[in-house]
Length: 498
Figure 1 (cartoon, helix red, strand yellow):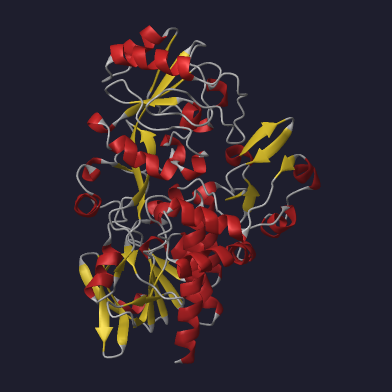
Figure 2 (figure 1 turned 180 degrees about the vertical axis):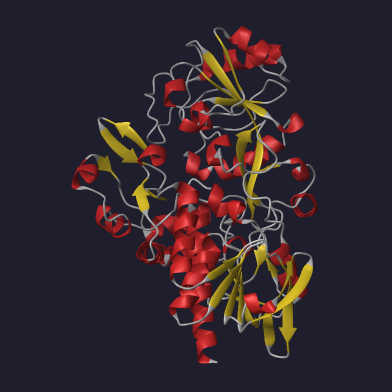
């Protein structure tokens, strides 16, 4: 059984974006590399497969973007205001959104290595495109990009993983599916390989280095309840069912230092009738991210959050938690005919929990689980509070807010008075967990004494300390790529020098 795996220099645990980048980087240094994936082929690729593909990257203008998107035409550049997203802006977002708890050394690596890492990915065969559909609004005939995001992978998460796996196979990296790693093997000089389960048999595979890139614990209901708190075991999971915290637990067992916000996660508004785990056919479209332009109502018929506090990219990853905290863990997003045509594409899929009515009173009766009398009163008070003298502008924080409400709406306040009215039922969908293990600036896993564990590296969701409370949209894939490449480079150099 062991012969099929050989004796690789580097074992990468996982097969998502972080794992693939780690494997490709280690291979560049001449190391022999294999990837071990718990999922079968049709579900392989971790959470990366389920993403829309947005990647947050530093760029100072269209010419930087052209290094990532070489087929970006002069016409496209002329028809758009891409703006820029500087190192300082990235630092500001990471600090502000994590309440300045982000590890400064990790944040520096993430930010300063973002552009060069995406350029490297492109050279490996990953394709990128400008995010016209998701991250731009047309203003005066020109696409204006917002929220610091201008770039996404071609074909979303599916396209990203497909091209990364093709690159791995081209470079001689074997990917073994349905091969869960269950234990790290320890020797006198550190980690010397892994134990896997294959067809109910346990097999040892020896190597000079192991890179853990097997995701967080978001798919493990027991760990969610233990670390995130009550009711989190009941939340829906946006992505893969295979991110059960196995890699984290293996690392802790050999003395890795727990790090980051173990009680925190990325969670969003997700269709209330979505399946328990992600569906690759529907992909990311169960999300419902146009809430800044409407209002959200809970079972009491009340608003419970400032829907327009900031651009979607900076609130969506924390508002899932807010929905989870509502009675019965659901909410309805409400819009009128002035806004409905501007809703994101995900609102138009067949698998959507939606009600429609010609009057607010009729809508109130259709909102399952909601106190209809309070709902009608909430709409009336909200409409009266909207600052209609301020123009509505969906492309920027427009300052069109409300006056006199206990929970204000700071931007994009829109009177709900144009029928037909629409409401979409949402609950909480967990994306990934923030707690992980401590790594150093070489991607090595540190032990509880702050010393690197020889032969052990980590990347992707395994890395703790980057995100607290919230995160800037599009940073997950970028983080996976940056720290995957870092771990792969470090491991590749180390094993070829042995």
